[in-house]
Image (tube, rainbow, N blue to C red; front, side):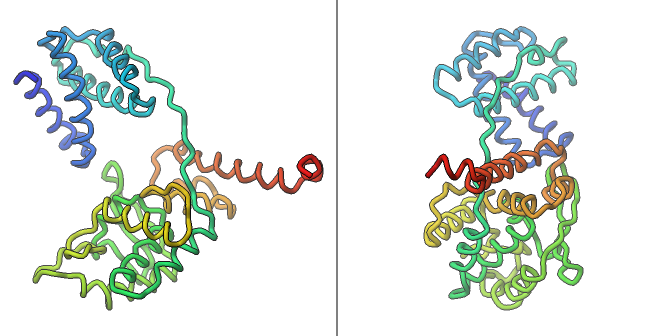
Length: 305
């Protein structure tokens, strides 16, 4: 890639972090996508962003399709490209935003994997309190299921975020928006036990890092470390579903909806900016309703006999 494009990417990075307040990981993902795109543009001997046309973006998307990229991956690339071209237009580096002329591909919405209440119970029962790490893992999973936090929010929690007497957590979520999340009594009890009895055993240095959940090196638990713990625990608990780091978050929302909780309240608890994001759980709920109907209705039972 030419130095010209590298300079534009540096300016865009600064814009994303300072103006859009994006997290470093999200910024890196955007930069990676657009770097790949600009390599393609560079190979077409286009050495000025003003010379890029909508057809060039469409051709790049076509190349991704030929290489077998999924519609969700292509949609992500196009989102990054649109963000980049919008930045160029806002900064008056180009006269027109050509990316605005390119339509986003339709993405098939996959329903998230959700554990049943019985599966969550089996998972949490398996974790137990047999070791320092099991005690940490139990407190971590119980808190996640009790609050529906994003995994990134859970792992970035500091002791200062906790207000156990008030039974709440104060945190800063997506878009640097502060939100308050209630915590149930049982999770509060486990957190107190973990903080007083277990967490001090995980600290490996003279200076306490301040994060709530620490790994075996005394540092903040990573997303990869959390996912490994969840995957192993699910397997040992006899759960065969394909879990993800957000499986307990999805289960939290679905179980609240099944219990009759208002969708707007679930939106607030999850920190969703748009109610449409939360509505995916109504699809999950409807799927379960259909299953119950097919099992319970006399005519359906008769058909299956």
